[in-house]
Image (cartoon, rainbow, N blue to C red; front, side):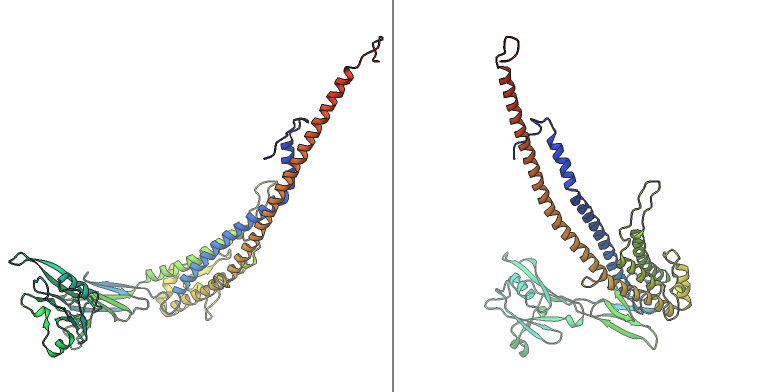
Length: 462
């Protein structure tokens, strides 16, 4: 840091003078900073708009297709039977009888210390007759369980403590269960290799004295139209019957001889909510654009008009028009206003739920097709502007970011230039102060010399 000669000789506030001069020098940088900050604000708003468009794109995709608003309500007369109605599910009203639920095949061995001396080989036989040989590290129940779990045979084994024998040796049982429910997941564990199994000389682990099949693997079973000539038995390896009815999954958790009533019916309230939610998203996007494009006028004399962040932005203006057209232009000669979607003279999008429900009640297919058509057009517009590679709004954001980067480089150069200018001014004023100090010293010296000269008798100097 250099020494400061702040008015030592001149009495001037040289620091204030330099600061004032630097303020003038920095005017272009200040203007550039303001312009950069303005661009950053624009980028932030454009990114927010782009995020809203991407969410709108996802919602519009979900709302397209024949099942766009085909929401239904699924009910069951018993909590042990539940229904899940998927998009496009058809109406159903019927009864089923749950004969049994799906079970996982489970066996338990006899109580034992180990499974015998010598190299041990076990063979797992699945319901299809396929054989998997297993060679544990030892015949201890714990090692056998680990080997069974690692075999990939679709079983889960564990060693369970079973007390002690007469000599106090600890006993264990092997509990082995299928990893999946259903008859096809049933298995047998043999003591012996595949050759012994084929020859019939291997021992079934569950057939030994003291062993048992705890649960026989079985499929879940329900009956449709029970007690009639049309009675139909339906089975499933799991407790969920996928598409038991078109688009309807049924899950059972308890067998019951009493019929269970199932119903799947249209849910107008859910349909209206789905439509209203999408329209609300579109309206929010349009409202955000409108607010960002509006200029603020002064309330009193001498005020200035403040432009909106989107004012004059042709890309945003085109987006607003495209979204508006997507929700108000006719589809197959009919206006979306016929299902309650309309834009007023101020450009405000609204949704009339009563009108929508009336249209849905009068012609569900036509109302669904109209809504899906609007959603498809909104999807197209959203994708055109927000695509992360070549979206129009994406390109606008990228352009603004590039401009901010260029401004940042310019600001760095300005900072360097201003630092150099300040250093120059400080050196200049320091030199001036030093020079002035020297002149003042010389002046004082000369004055003292003149004062010391002798004077003549008349009172004057000789």
